[in-house]
Image 1 (cartoon, one colour):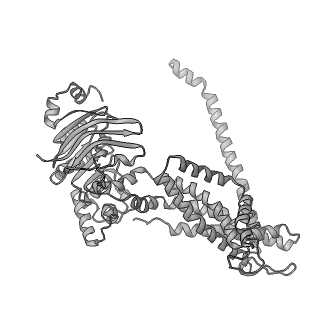
Image 2: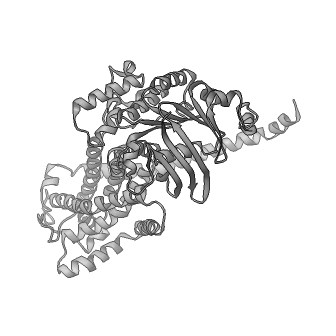
Image 3: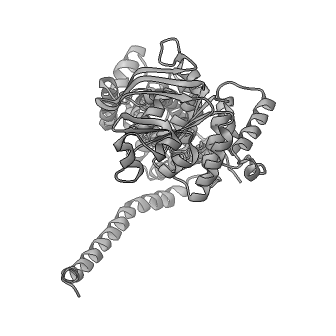
Length: 252
Length: 288
């Protein structure tokens, strides 16, 4: 099994407040890894450390090592912009760019990063929308506003937008938490398709969702990694008492 | 009825009465606030419309006693002054606002910039005029359109800084993060995502600033000075609508008083037209 991401003692701060106490975790290629834990345990902070998005918050700081394909993404020679092109991210709330059409939303990562070949961009937009299972719904109105779509469609639009830049890894920060059950189901089905080509790390506070969609699960609590295992083992026979308490709903 | 319900009901009548009184007061205040605004507009409209014709906006002022004079030179002068002020004020203001909002929100330097901008907003405009007089008019040994435009530009900068910063701050961070997470460079996110999202608000801010400075008289008294003839040279004294309105309004001649009203109406229309044109120009792409 190829380990595409390896983290070593990742610690993160917001100003003086420590959010992660040293997370060491290896993520397998072409698998879905779920990060679960109660609110405020550092799930989102952790995945934001994986594509150097943590540092865009003023006062935020990261220490430790994150190796992606054996390259330390925090070394001085690495440009965060290159990292983020290889590691896409989908956020909790759908955030299509409000001034852009559906087409331009998906194309934005290419066009605004200097890709000028129109044919290539158009093909990439179609391919990405198809992968995000949105093409059939929007193909006749690509030049309408991205904001005209429903919440679930907007989130799939954001997934298509992230896929268009052809990343290797897709980070998802509770991508379905703002969506209704039907849209959630569509996103979950989509993940099973996407993992054939991408490595997916998904943060969720919904344990059933983690159990349904992920191959591996990591349980975080108060900034510490409590347990990390195959999802099946974790949900059937957890090793740590706290994991058991959490997944059986005793707290969180 | 349980005890809690009874306690609620005890205050019922008083609550309803308070609600009614407060609501009435608010509506009343809204009406009172509108009275001066509407009466200014209707009075200027009624008094100014008589003299406002093509001749008024194309002719030079005529000597006392002759009819048919206009404020054409004042109109041109105001346009030139506002243009100079915009060339100075808009880039300085907008770029400073982008710095404050996108690059350095906290720290000593941004706080100082904000404090100075806020202080400038409160400075009497005549003081800005005296400043421009001392640093531009005296060294150049002449009143000039440039000095007037610079004085107005100085007044425009803080208005644009604070307004634009507010508009940029209203753009949710989630759009910035989405752009950065796609591997866009920071300047690209600002130019292609943040600014287009905020552009209407920024233009409104700039228009409010321009509307405000185009009616300023005090800073022009010691800088642009006024001119009875056509002039488009920026190193020479230049006419301006507010100056001409001022001079005509304090004159003893009935004919000039009427012209002052027409000039006021012209000034209001000018601001309105600039505002409409800029709104149309930045109209957001309409999606079907």
